[in-house]
Length: 495
Ligand SMILES: Cc1ncc(COP(=O)(O)O)c(C=O)c1O
Image 1 (cartoon, protein in one colour):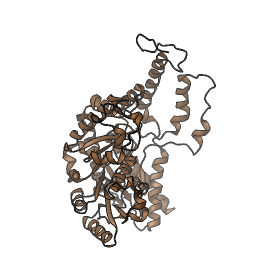
Image 2: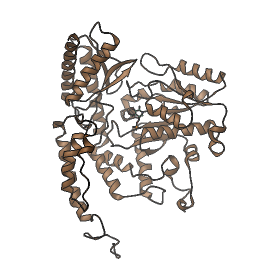
Image 3: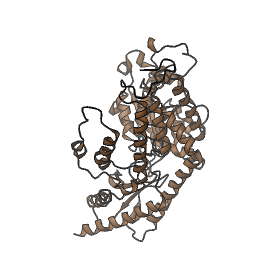
Image 4: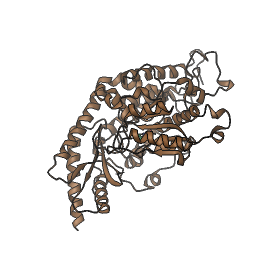
């Protein structure tokens, strides 16, 4: 029920499941609890120590009537916390950082609390225009030219799918308005490498290219796409009557943070009118650092850049930036204009529903705005530089370790250090067993969390530094843990 003179909802209205006053009290309680969780996170194990099904078994059914926030907080403690892998923990070195800065969380809360619906400019002008402005701010902070226009998607996976659909439509002169790819000849080819994130292959398959039309271009010893091999693959496909369509560049790959050489690859792509998608999901945060931009040389030549502030920068899932040069093409592929969404503002405003897959849009730009405002870009940059320094420190420790069995598997380009401990005389299988043994002993102990991954056909361990609260002392402790775990695993080999 609303007060007609002010339009406001009075507290205590019995038709509401929760009144604004109850929300205020419960919200304070929850924020206090979350602040305590973050403040005390170091006392928790990093990796969840539960067995499959344990969390589900512990979940109480909701009460028939209204329950209380205190009950829920106690269930968070008892049911959820034991089942949390605490990626905001300073000893989290797994995956890539999935940072949720407290400032960004407040922005996300504001977004949900405001309850806006982004289905057209008119349905929420602020949601659209704040997103436009924030994407412009970030573009400038990254040193990208004004040629780029940006929006925010949920994930890099969605962004890759959107981009490959746009590539397909460019190559087929908008086949979607006719028989689609089913009526198109010759077959279209997508190029990437075996280092590409799984979402790239998934996007190519979902965009209708077909697994046989996804090429894995040869890489150099540093896992980067070789331009000569790319050119050869393109020429081979042309000779065989196929149509090169898109290349997805790994700009900071998931395995070893390899950077495909953008400029020579994009120049070849231009020669053959091939769409270029730059997947900088993780590494895009490094664009914020002028001294790291050499890794992105040639980025202005690509068609789409994707990077996720929700990884290293810390803008809280989900926040994936999607920058394009040719907005007209994007809109032509993605637009829909049902009558109920038409408005007098059409033609003067951005309609973000025409920039991607979903219709309903969250107010994601608020969390980027909050983070930039409350933390400040220089503090964010200082944190990223701290992580780069910590990675270099760990690399040096490993390279100069008295135990010569430690190896850095691939050059450290950013904040991830990929390692193996290789005692002499082991077969490939024994070495894999050894690697998995020492890393699992660390992960299962809960004191730190690392990711084992296969590289060049053998297991290695990724140490991905960059949780918000990871300081040098945490990396030092980790290195101690790694040495101890590897020593114990080596002893177990003898036994
Ligand atoms: C290089 C790269 N691309 C894409 C992705 C997929 O990101 P998302 O979870 O946003 O879909 C990841 C995830 O870590 C990644 O590392």
